[in-house]
Length: 318
Image 1: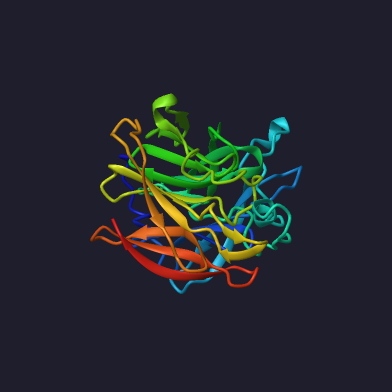
Image 2: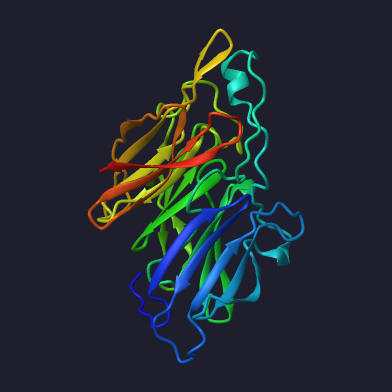
């Protein structure tokens, strides 16, 4: 992105809670003293009429929020709503791995099981979101009084859950069918997405396929996040794990995770991925990560001594 703006100067993006994603933009200069930016919330809805939507809120300097409106991620004029994932289903992965000896596990997480499913471009002119139930991505032009739908594109895989953007390159992580990543060119003019094609795509098969892949939406062991490194030279993909240790029908250890690093050039062409295991005692691996200015990767993992997951923080360097 090369367009300049005085309103949007710093961005924070995160995925939270049961079935929503949040992206926040913060301004440092504005002609209204009570205005400090905007907050965007993705509903992840499977409503057959309106589909997935993004709610936009005006945010004051005191943190007060005022709803501007809801903006569908699909073009409703032609009856084609784009669907979110809805809530997470019951996970079958341990029952499959144990040959039926272990029960189904309740996955009390959001339906995506990921981070960065709704993100802003660095210049805050474009907003991007996933539509996991429709295997698509949506891009918006960000305006002061709302969002304008720019494009809807196939995600290049099954069940997209995470996005990352660097300059005019955007990559999507699909967590279904063992996972895949796909790259897109972002228009400097109107935020539309154009697929990069084969050179910007990679399958995660071989990185996350210890046993039969879980159905889309089974979030305990699926790929979780994709992120550019700060210099834009590599893509990091976190995978929560797929190698549960089970003996005599008893769960000895939950799946350990891994991080896969793909080199990427300025045109979005991908190199061969390099795997780094991410093992934690009774943990299910790396779910979310961010970078500090010193190229330190801060990772959040899931730890589940009981069926209900909770998060645990850890630290890894790149």
